[in-house]
Image 1 (cartoon, rainbow, N blue to C red):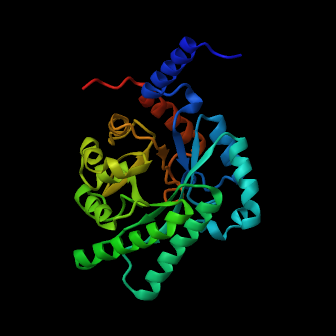
Image 2 (image 1 turned 120 degrees about the vertical axis):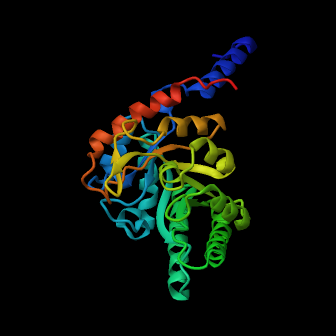
Amino acid sequence: MRLKRREFLAAGAATALLSRFAWASESQLPLAFSTLGCPGWEWGKILEFAQANGFAAIELRGLMGKMDLPMLPEFAPRQIPQIKKQVTDHQLKISDLGSSAEMHVAEPAERAKQLADAQRFIDLASALGVPYVRVFGNKINGPREEVLARVVDGLHQLGEYGAPRGVTVLIESHGDFVDSPTLKEILTRADSKNVALLWDAHHTFVDGHEQPEHTVEELGSWIRHTHLKDSVPDGKGRKYVLTGTGEVPVERQVMALREIDYKGYYCFEWEKVWHPDIQEPEVAFPQYAKVVSGYLKEPLKKA
């Protein structure tokens, strides 16, 4: 049945309004979770749980607690078509692959290994049709300019490697790289369309001491993916808690991204691998989806 012109235009306007303010339905909200939060789950359970609980994507950061994804039999070349079909059949996407490659490393042999590891992840992402691979700057453990130069060089090399493969490399705001001036300098100097930012909003707030609105204002043009989580002080460190129950302004982080019309996923990074005492994913994942769905459905305040 063909729509009349007036009906077509009305339908288009309604669709645009829904996407501007909330997305059309619960299942369409751009929610994701990292597999870092479910180290005991097999691949099939990950897909089924994501689909059943309103997630649109998953971030692959290990499987069954094993972090070197390109070496896992589940992601062997012959398995790739089946993996892609399974993801599609569950109406999901893979948002990105999380590598552990560190760009600050100076020792030549170890540096070559870090770059090679990142390239293996880029190759896997390309085969899977995944747009992003995460790497770290990680540590400033020597003269600052020398470390930054190494990080910039590593990102540029990986961006050039990823470009013909359809993959963009994301440096995460992590470790000693959690403030906007440093990240902005690195991303500018990397000078590549295939280098961008994974904004771990927890780290820029807790460790970088930045308000989310400021971080997004400074770095928003580079943000392609996110890590969101909440925490409270716990002795000399922090303890991760269910979303919206701690001190991290997750709602403001989400709203700051919405204000710039961010098109990526709002990804829950529940660090169960590193902190086995925190809540089980069966509890934390649906709770995150419910809370952040509410944030995404709130009307934006007019300027």
